[in-house]
Image (cartoon, rainbow, N blue to C red; front, side, top):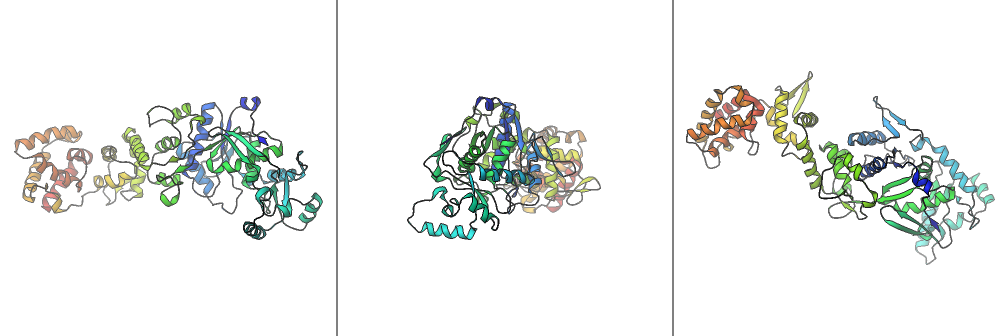
Length: 528
């Protein structure tokens, strides 16, 4: 029976944790949470956060995925102390003394340890910790089908080929290896027993030997599997705590068996709960976006995303929802992470992102909004200057004011493209029918706009520097004329925005300035 233990010397070491993604595509939201929890743990304990790229599965390798992972982590504000990073020239470089940190550059190490296990013998059984397997994938599949259709008892190691290859002597195995391709498999003990360990989140976890298969350690092409490379790297990089997703929980007994076989002390383990859709199914592409890149493209702020992801399965304390990253690090405790799956609530993310945008200074928010306005064709850049889609020049101050007006309503940076476009064009698209107040007429609307035009034309630029100043001037004017606010301000606002819903006309006039305000009022009058 295997028990995981952590002695005092290990506990006294500087904590070292790692995030080890595979470059098989864009970084998943679950991967971002795993990376974040590792960094929060490291910062809380004064430890080291390591990034390692696990690219041993070459059949699933995606070109450019490593660069995407590095860009995404940088965007999110996660900064590993060791491992790969993107240099200013776009190349992938590494920092730290335990590298290389990309597994495909460490294959000789893995082969060495796999071969070593062939020659190491377990004292209790007298058998080697690993063995060569010469079965082809087709033979294994056929044996599985035959086994499933029979009433035969399970074989040691759960694999149907075990009887064929586990029982080979060293001499027989070596002779076959000289002429046939093979893989190296872990030999799970065939006696009654179990692997048990204490998970920092789940408590005591047990696996019977009979539930663990003879996992491939080294493939026939000489590349290691995830299991061997993972254990070797965690040992050689002196990882003290492995914090990873729940999906890796069934792999832990295999890893502990490997640690025992290699004579190494295992790290502590913590397996994070799954992320779930609102219907409590596993978060998947079928029900929504799962890649961090998707949320970045939709205009979520990195600080909002980090805050949101941190609270998926963990909450520091109290009723707060907003935390800075430093606050999260100070409060982080693995023991407080829930065992149950965490529901990904998009509405909460929208709310949180909106709150972060409201708090941003207008100038700072404007700068991060501009790229989204360009992507959606609201703005273009010509000769170093910004112009509207219709070629009209865009004043930076007008741009800042438009963002300031809409940031209280927007949920993402992308929302600004739909709500601010009319601020920048030389004219807005108007329908004659929408200009009058619903209880009024075109004739009344025209009269009100004539009056407003004359009054606005006589005001100095000072009144357009503050929406409150303009409102304080126009509202009394409306009352003096015996008009109602509804049948006066509705056509005024529609004339400026071309929309039935928008900020007040005083705010829009403040954002676009006197000249453009008068031009739009004139255009509405002409249409009527």
